[in-house]
Length: 189
Ligand SMILES: [Zn+2]
Image 1 (cartoon, rainbow, N blue to C red):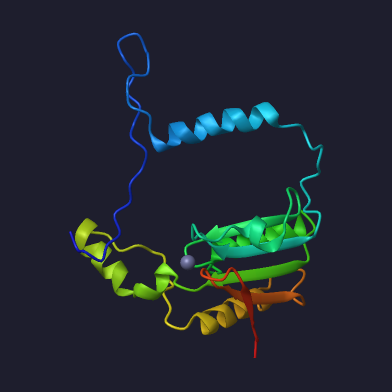
Image 2: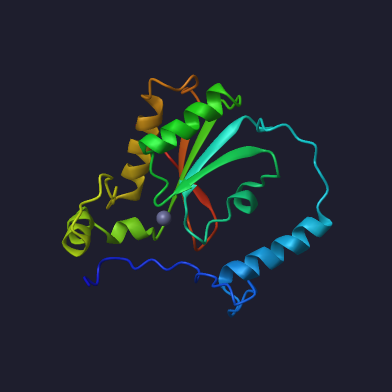
């Protein structure tokens, strides 16, 4: 396999024993489910509406070092968070933003990319490598980039020029520094 192709791993399947009993070692997902049971035990229904309190949608990279709620002082119910590899404004992100604005009342859009993003080390060649390995080229673009500031600018542009969005006057873009935790705003010009 080509060394540039990222290997994805998933939780192991859970085979049922002879009596339907679960017979396997705990997986990562089992740990998450156990954590959820503790979470639910202390949980009280906040009685919230689905409409974000701050009327804001945040589009960010899925990077594990970016804790959006902590980094932005957000509380439960405050915002929509839309995340993917790179925080790229794809058609599917526009789909989520359109629903966020038109059905759930958000008005502001915040875009957050970050230093040291994995997409900086990939190229569109990744799609060709995938095709060589699996016999099929993905329909999606990798959306790799070299200049994170420029990538934020073009993401802001995609949001601002979308015909589907109701509110494109408050769209701001930032680069999150994974070493300092600070946001740096990107001038749209
Ligand atoms: Zn990233």
